[in-house]
Length: 439
Image 1: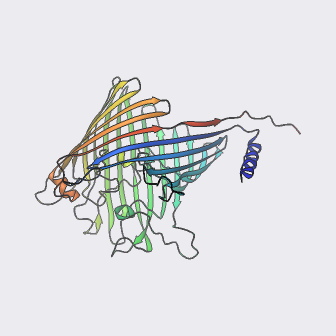
Image 2: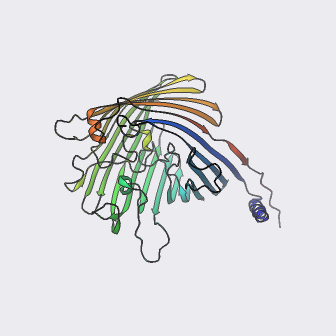
Image 3: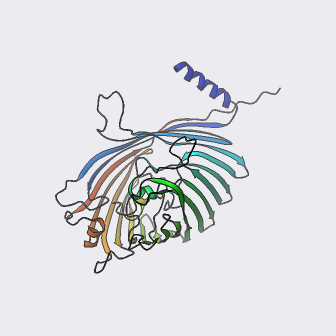
């Protein structure tokens, strides 16, 4: 077997000899300790906190030449201790193919990218790589791309199936609960356009996702037929003066949530950041439309940021839109932040959120949900290693108890974590092209 591998590598080297290329091998290793006492939802009184260490161990292989590139990334995502020490095999299903794609460049700015890949655009509100989650997020998709003079255009398509089938294209979503009806699309087509100017940039995104119909009696069993949902909008960034930036998002969602229920929702965000020196100050507001009756009137009005890096938004404790809060009362989020440079290679982030429901939870129920405080300290240890330490505290209101369905929460709701991110480069090989002999 080893001889065959060496022979294959030799053929590979001979095949690329004489061409300008680059081969790289990198890693992404990140253990993260977490202490959860109210993360994602209120923890009830008398319930012990969750404590664990989770680790991503990712190996990345890259190849580039003038008109072609390829990338393969495999990973193991596991919790310390979930595999017995003397086990002959790892039976926890923690190993997976994170990405595997090829990219052909046609010239004149055109290229195509095919395979399993992360889709990340703008501020990652709608499409994001979800790097905070140890497994990340990928799409099996084909992209047609164009880039020229500050203008970018991506056209992407995807079609998902559970396996090879000769008779039907019925798709059984892989997730459960609310995520089953949001993340696991059967088909997708989208277009993203972006243009940069000297002090302004703008993006336009239009996406259509088709979902397999689910049996209305249980909301889980796939049945014949599909529904289509559209997400569309713009991301704008203005930099009118040195240190000042203004960012705005406006998105809408339409289409069918189910065969019986329509979808009509919106999302808007405005954020102003100012960095006069080494300290950044920011103030922002985001609203995501909600629904006060769960679609019982034939229409869902709750916006959901479908494939975004949602941990980045609306508080780091993930009370909203991280596998939860779908088809709910929506959210109004007023927030302020500051990033203080504490040293040559360190910084401190302080961020506060004021949360309120976009729709009412009921008669005589206050819209105010709570206030969250996030603190993150970042220290660069080496060029390829960074330490991050965080603490978040949720000051929940009585309305939050109703929203989360926890009648007797613990007095303190908080979450602490520490993560070491190490991304070493093991190999970067760029052999000099060999001149082609004249015949």
